[in-house]
Image (cartoon, rainbow, N blue to C red; front, side, top):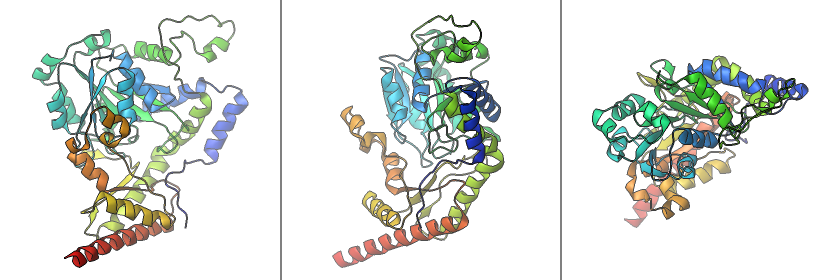
Length: 414
């Protein structure tokens, strides 16, 4: 049996939406993008949504919008994909990397300890669909002593008057906190629509704004839309209507807009997400938990508690008591049986770029521990029961085999 890790969900409704775009003869930013933005506003209850061509470009945009520059610091977790740090580096700022808690998410205590007068923003990463503890993070950044440290050096920083809280929500579309979209708990939530995400536009992302009332959301939306188009006053669709060819360039922007041909894919998927696609993901996650619960080595990923619920993007299996080397051997065994698995993530301080910048994994023991024990299992709506059963059987067999082998080796050595 061959089971891929994370194929995109493409059904007839997606094909129809894409064909409709092709037949319209309008491929770049236009009505489909606006429609997807409107769907995202409704889905997340955010004040505004701006579609872009990737999570990374959206994060760079928002850091630049906030005035992040050389000499500034942005706090991020060690346990994340490199893009979380790359967006900071692209702005000339310093990524201040801190450790995570046992739920894979950034440690609020570590954040508190890392804040200085140079701190301008925090990027909290929702892992595998599990949202961070935004209640604690908001409490930290609103403390009087922390506010006293904050030095505003831009118009947006003066308007906010404190550290900016950004949610790296690449994994967490559909996650909730106290029954409300998790995106509402940060100032800015940035989603990814990459090909392996719960909803895809092939490549793409979306910025959701939940700024304080003193910000003019409509004005910010217009400004950010211009920013995605090189600072141009009109997009191509507006220019194409009648005699609307004249435009102006108001500032040095970026070219990071999402095309309609991409938005069409996500538009079809998001309409099915709550009623069909997300519940199917949850069912698979719960089936995994049931299948592994009798195994003494099984550490369940965080999925739901009294306040938070995951979006079930990744099933992050952790295996108690193994080493990184053992984990890798288990993966080799699983993949040899035809089941594609992954690891989320290699902590930033283990990557060559960040090691060259002076970060050392020994400073992040929790991040390393989660990494060394983790195997990401397939979880997507197209998986059927027999495939999930086969994955469970294959994983249990591979883990038990490795643990038995390790036990034998220890006995022989003794």
